[in-house]
Length: 321
Image 1 (cartoon, rainbow, N blue to C red):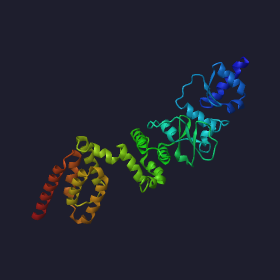
Image 2 (image 1 turned 90 degrees about the vertical axis):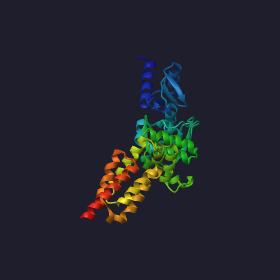
Image 3 (image 1 turned 90 degrees about the horizontal axis):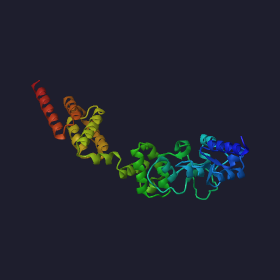
C-alpha cells in the first residue's frame, strides 16, 4: 500500500473510532498529522465539518453538528470512553436534546450542551453549567442526551415560551416517551417560579394544555359512545376496588362521576369516602346489580332503575321475612 493509501486508511480508522467523525487530536494520536488531514480534505477523502473535526466525504448524519460540538469538548478522548461516564465531559441538552428526541420544532441552530464544570465554549456552541445525575441522561445515536423529562424542565428553566414547551410535551406524550411521575419530579425545582405549588401540578398543567391529560382526554370524548364506554369501564374498576359503599351513595356517585368527567378520579374518591360511614346500609344485591350493569355500558338512568328495582325487591323480601 502506498504512503498516501496508508494515511487514508489510518484516517478512516480514526473516523470510525470517533463515531463517524475524527478530531485533529484523535488523528494525531493515531499517526495522522494536521498536514495529512488537510491533504485528505483536498483529495476528497474527508470533509472538514467544523474546526478540528472531519468526516468521510459525503457522509450523512442528521446530528453531525451536535456530534462535532460534543467531540470538541474533549477532542483527545475516544467517544466510546466518554460514553461510559458522559456527565463530566458534557451532555446534549435543551433545544438540541429536543431535536435528538424528535420533540417539537424549536430552532436548534446552535448546539446546546450541559457541562458539570466551566469549559471554554467554541463559537457556535452554547454551554450550560448545571449538575446532572445519571438518571437525567440517556444515549441516543451514540451521543449522551438529557432525557425528555429533564429536557422539558431545562427548557422551562431557560425561559423558553411555555406554548413551545407544551408542543414538546404533546409530542413526547403522543410518542410514549414521557414518564408523568418522572416529569413531575424534574419540574419540582422550578414549579413555584412558574406559579404552581409543586412539580405534579405543573406537569398536570402542561399535559392539560397539550390536550393529553386524563382530564383533557375525558373532556374530549365526553358524550361520545366510546367515551361512555371508557367512563363506565373506569367507574366499574373504581367500584371494584371499594369494598362496601352504601347503595344510595354508590348510585349518586355514578351520577356525579359521569357528570363531572373532568374530575373523574377526584369525584370517585370523594364519593366513595363519603359512603364509608354508611357501611351498615350496604346492600350487597344492589352493589352486585349495579356493577353487573356497568360493563354493558348502560346509561346512568338505566343503572339507577336497576338499583331501584333491586332495592325494592330486597326490601320486600326483608319485610316478608
